[in-house]
Amino acid sequence: MFSEIARWFVESGAVPQGSLRVERRREERVTVERGVVQPRRISESFGAMVTAIEGGLGYAATSDLSVTGLKQACDRAVAMARAAAGRMIPGFPVPAPFEGDIDYRGPELRPWAGVPLSDRIAMLRDADRGLKSDDRIVDWGASFWSIDKEQLYVDVKGGRVAQRVHYLMPTLWAAASAQGETQRRTFSDAGMRVGGAEILDQIGFFAAPAQVSAEAIQLLEAPNCPEGTMDLVLGPGQMVLQIHESIGHPLELDRILGDERNYAGTSFVTPDMFGTFRYGSDLLNITFDPTLGEEIASYPADDVGTAASREYLIRGGLLERPLGGATSQARANLPGVANERACSWNRPPIDRMANINLEPGEGTLDALIGRVERGVYMETNRSWSIDDSRNKFQFGCEYGRIIKDGKLGPVVRNPNYRGVSSAFWRALKGVGGRETFLVSGTPYCGKGEPNQAVKVGHATPACLFGDVSVFGGA
Image (cartoon, rainbow, N blue to C red; front, side, top):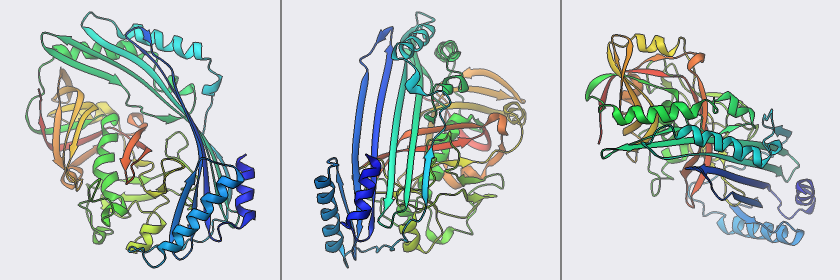
């Protein structure tokens, strides 16, 4: 059906210049909570977005994929483009037609569709039982969220990108409560990844329930995190959030140009900073990399047909390149990346994060900790707050441990830290090696009006920061 739609679009001439993007998505959530199998949740979505260029830019989406429905969408897009001619204040470039012909399939060694529902539920039941290890565990559960996505992009000149990807996000949680204190521990640092049942082995899902439950009890019995200025070691799961909020969002070029100020805020980064601004220490190397197959924002071309490639955003601590697609690049006269992305067939592409990764250094987690005389180790995000220019922030974690004289010490609860984005990254003084590296991702990154929640990948090692404001919480 995808091929038939694409053939009609190219041959009909309904849109003189533009493109068509067709997407089919099927989602399933299976959950066992406190020993009870929850109702299975399934959703399906199938539709198309037409982009027309006729002096201006016009969009129209439809779930009616008959010839009549597609023709009506094309007519609406062309009419909107003509109405917008001369009235688009920021302006836009006329892109060259996409000339490639690409078929891309994300890695899936053990297809999730081949795992019977009964087996999925049995795995979750086993995990659920393992989480209830103590009478003080008052809430617990396990879930699988899977998404199968098929997408086709075609230009009026016949350029074509076909993609098929399966995503899986396993989650475990346990909350412990006693004497007025409640602590929650989750197993979700691996986030959402591309692949099938092999992901469960890769992330240690089957051994995790006992650890999650035990750590929830440890937190319940632990003292509050100490307060003061000290060294901070962040596990890769927390680094994902740090990169996302204080590097990814500030570097989105449409935000820098002011497009998001009504809704998601602006950025402390300005166009003149690129090429000269010291964002972090010499150890900070950040890449935009949509070529890592298991990471959830991997693709051969973005949703306007721009071929994707690995690019440095920050190299040796210096800011090099923003997260701006072809439209924003033309507006700002800055280089960018292939990151014009849409969350669904009924949304137009805008500048988004994709796979934003911190390149690894050398050494183990123990080696990083061994460099600390006085500090705290933290992992797994629990809360976050950051100002509307993505500059001042305060983040809280689920789990912490004191570091003293290069050794991990007692567990502490409610560990938090605060900082200012560029000052924090300039205090980066240790980057772990491949042995600490985690490929992760979030499906919840929101932006745009109307809102778009897209999948964003982050891969990072553990990191050491100096002189950070650390504190406990209630």
